[in-house]
Image (cartoon, rainbow, N blue to C red; front, side, top):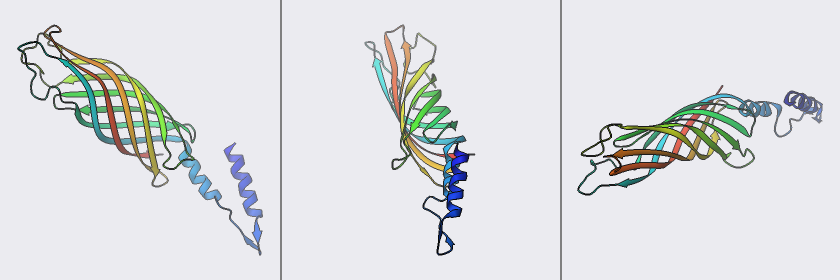
Length: 210
């Protein structure tokens, strides 16, 4: 379908004369071809930014958390690959790590996104679904009855982003993510607990399209 449109436009362009000179209409065939190369295909990307987490905690009487155990801000990095099915639809597979003072959260997820290409900054929205794993670098509590310092489970969420095409292959983008998960650190048989409920990320990155 696209090939037929391009051939038709090429014939129309070749037949357009003004004073014997060929007139190339606005949106030339070369520009259209470049745009089509951005519309579909495989891409990879890397991004980084900041994260804010929502945490709930319960502390037993005469007990204490280690300094830094309730940290709720950190850095986040992500690498991924994706495929653009059309100018409006693309999907990604991503690996993401959020780093706090005593906690690392690894997310592995897929996303499906819809992009508004006729709007300034090419905004897009998407949904996320995947697997999340949390690990403590050390015990968050002075006395720990439950020695398991890890948690894992389903994660899901939403994202919204904008992007700017830099060259035929390179694109700059920024995105916001809301990610829901349920990581519970059960300390002293529920006498004290720390729960990470959801995270909010802001990332900036670059994408390379093949």
